[in-house]
Image 1: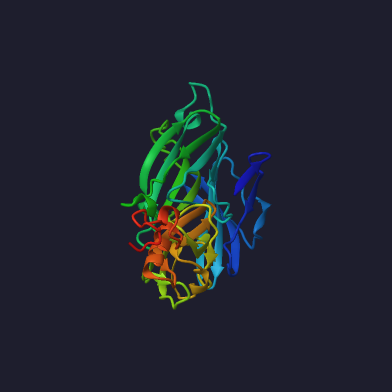
Image 2: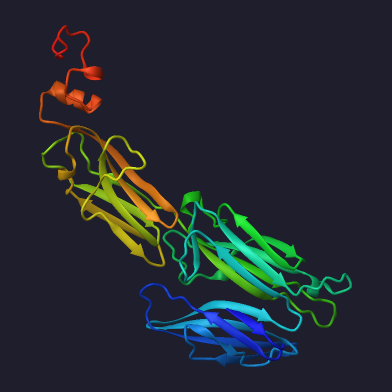
Length: 370
């Protein structure tokens, strides 16, 4: 949400709302709170579309106003504060944009092992040393908060967020802050699960002893941080014989990223990058959601993908906005239907012939029989 001003008494409020996939019915409104030294007064613009602009419900002069963009779900009834901005005749204009590799439009989000960036743009700060501090400076604040094990941020008391840093800003223009990792608390850096909130705040004004003006948030923005997926593949029994019945395997997947496609495949050889392999039927999980998910899959439908003796890999990978990553992998031996010695050669040298690396140099005819 942003505001534009022709004259300070004639503010225009603009907004744009992106709802998550599969969202139900929502209604939207803007609340304007006019602040003065004796109290406050609320004004509303209701029945708003998902994007547009309206004139401010009330004047923002001679005092300041806070504008809040709200959306309300109808079933069940639940309200959400989407954006807030604080404006006034002597309040600097500020914007916060958080960027990550995930283009999700509803809220900025990232993964625990990836960086993000915060663009801070300030205009309207006074530059004369004779001006009071409230006109010459603002504060850039960073807070973090964990969701707890399996948490999604629902019913979170954001007043409990932990302060991380507070930096004064006394120059107009654009500043970009880059963070290689999140400050969300976690004992495992790959399993951070929570959010960070950044704010631009005015400084307290105590220039008039009888009229203390506390700091106010000009604008704020948040980024969600989700954990890196992990998992396991269990149930494989080695060796497996080509063409025989194979054991059922269990594929356990934890913390799949909200926007991801995950599948399990088999291929010949040790775990390696850049292979396609054969995707096992029934093991593909596609998510397009607002929160991570766990899955447990079972399959014994992979016998036809194993075509020869040797070492093989069963591997689960996940594709997210950050790339393709291995979630779990196991290596197992596959034996053919020949003699035990031929199977041994095939497993270790990828050939059953008594030649090359597989040849028995102590055997006069190299047939593997001393």
